[in-house]
Image 1 (tube, rainbow, N blue to C red):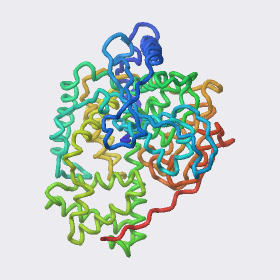
Image 2 (spheres, one colour):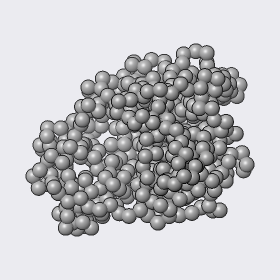
Image 3 (cartoon, rainbow, N blue to C red):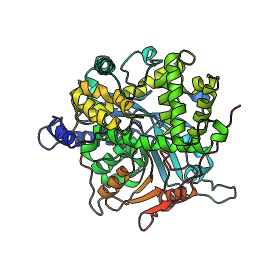
Image 4 (cartoon, rainbow, N blue to C red):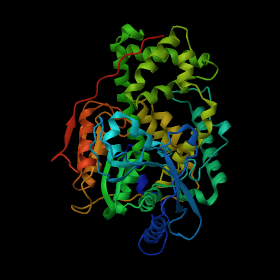
Length: 527
């Protein structure tokens, strides 16, 4: 997830002063019309169910994976108006205990999953049941994933011609000039204009509150009396909105790598906090590379590794690798390594090879892949629409410039890239929502499980602490001194033990718990 966020006292005052459309839209209590619309849509979905058959890409999928569609209102305030279809994937519970034997495992219903984004698809999530760490859950649950509204093939959004989406090679200045800022601001305004022109009035209905309502309709269509849900990254935010809107419909919920749901944090402030956190992860990565200087030869201290990276960036500015990889493409590839430790070895190897005269590994990792342009453009459009629609944003570039110039002095690695990603929200044409103040009282919501890595940069750890505070009875399990984004069902047996105890038996630790970090990745030598 590219969660968003600001960091200044002035920013808080600014956000409070900005105007916002209420979550509702009908006279009286905000959201009343949408609540009624969600009830109508859920009743229709329960009656219709889901007719599962071949998936859109059936030739590439195992036969156990089946797909269907669920119809939801575009605008929940008008459930009899325009409707769209969400594509849902499912693999039935196997009922078989891992490791063989004859013991049957009772089915516990459907486990619905969202991987985050905004803009990511969970349609193929059910296939994860083939991974050893997921087999016990796959025995007890139908694994269900779906493409959220706007994400292909669910009424896909687009903001520009996909053939124009990959722009490169590009610079990545840590201290951009005034001329470069004006250029990027003009691009952001044009992108926002493209979103409005290509989607029209429907654009306003792609936001997190509607994603939460869509989840309620999917629950009903699956025939589940109550929802069992796992959300990762951005999925934790609209999962929290679901808990606020439909607490009585929750059976069990897992929040993995948590967005801070505080209304004042959505989304400008969250993005600033993310940029600050990535500076620490960038140092973690450099420290790991330095520890393997015998393999990569990039320096035996984090500072020396940074020097190697900066030398490569300068060389790419002079002569892009493969004609497509410039400093921005290098930075983007290394930023992705901040999400997942397992990306570290191959990024380090590609940088090492490039500085030794072989650009091919770097071009393969960081270069644009034209065949992926359509999906990448769609994902970017949904990300932008949801975050821009969800909340007020500063509308004057001077505010962005002031806050991020200050932040870039201590956190230069991601700061300006994050600005360019989110800046269309300054020029957004659709009405904004007002974020909900997510809070549940004791007994209002069943106990939920929160998972977080202590050094996660994409969703900083403070967000997990905040969600735990807001959801009464929730329990937090922390992977200590670790930074991989998304820890459920990975290589950490301690984390997986807590996950399985909760989802299979409804059992949570008596109090917050912690797990030792996963093993550090092994270096990948050249060749």
